[in-house]
Image 1 (cartoon, helix red, strand yellow):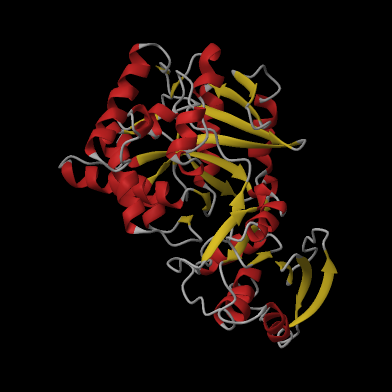
Image 2 (cartoon, rainbow, N blue to C red; image 1 turned 60 degrees about the vertical axis):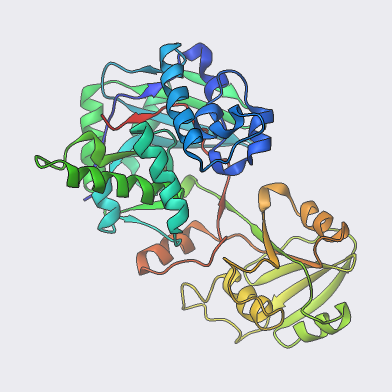
Amino acid sequence: MVKIKPFKGIRPPKEYASQVASRPYDVLNSKEAKAEAGEKSLLHIIKPEIDFDPIADEHSQQVYDKAVENFRLWQERGWLVKDPEECYYVYAQTMDGRTQYGLVACCHFDDYLTGKIKKHELTRKDKEEDRMKHVRNQNANIEPVFFSHPANAEIDAIVSSVVKGAPEYDFVAEDGFGHHFWVIRDRALIDRITEIFAAMPALYVADGHHRTAAAALVGGEKMKQNPKHTGNEEYCYFLSVIFPESQLKIIDYNRVVKDLNGMTPEQFVAALDDDFIVTREGKDIVKPSALHEFSMYLGGQWYRLKAREGRYDDNDPIGVLDVTILSNLVLDKLLGIKDLRTDKRIDFVGGIRGLGELKERVDNGGMAVAFALYPVSMKQLVDIADSGNIMPPKTTWFEPKLRSGLVIHSLD
């Protein structure tokens, strides 16, 4: 049911891989990217505003044009080279002693439009349009999207056999995460992988909803422009790394709020008692240890909050989520925050930064209160995607992030 294909990857020679590979466009601001980018870094292609002094508006035409120029230069200089034959690839990442192994393939845009590639987040039109401009201008998927697939023993066995060989790339990035990459050239193996995925009922977007939507929309545009369209053209496909869902780990995605909506800290803690069992824990950091348990940092003190029975619905795939419970019973009910996407009083902190970041955001006076949440599980994500529901904003944080620049897909 799911259509994937091998492709002629555009990628760095082995000796340049660690220099070309970069963090994704959306985890660094322009200033951070400029400071981090070495001479060969893909950041010059995915965040080309850094090549201007001062840094240019990332949405200006000159920046889009610079991206195209840099992509061409990287190929002319031999920092990116196209494989002569269609391949699949295996991309593995190591973090904290745990390694996850993904298949690098091209997925068909029609599978996204018809719901065989399932999403769990809403996308914003402005961000879709920005990503679409990059794909259109480059005529390529420069950065991959991050998918998961249901458990499949044969795919696991194939990947295990591939990674017994020497990797094409093998390096540890500056953040301490390991990146390992193999090329699958065996035609029989490639054909079998395609067949196995054709029997899978669905894939799931883990990270990269806007890139997925943009790639699908560009594919649709090119389809309309081609009167001889067959559905097998290269532009119908986009770059993906697909991991077994059993190997993926979602980490917490936490919240900080600027004020207490007119309440004193004492009044706020008292108001929480209606819906939570509130325990004051002291000055040492408190981490939630189970579903429906939260930690809160307020006024130099950590608290443990446990949602009272009857305040949530474990049979509702959205209602069971801790982000929903916190939004309904605290952010909306007590703090008056109705829309997480637009309210400027709230900000979000990925768990990779640690709970010390929450304490710091409050202690420096910028925020009044911080909430740490228990992470969403892959089962919850799949249940929501299967049910056709959408998670609240800023629910999932996957780590490690995919490195960009290990392989690129041309739409030609």
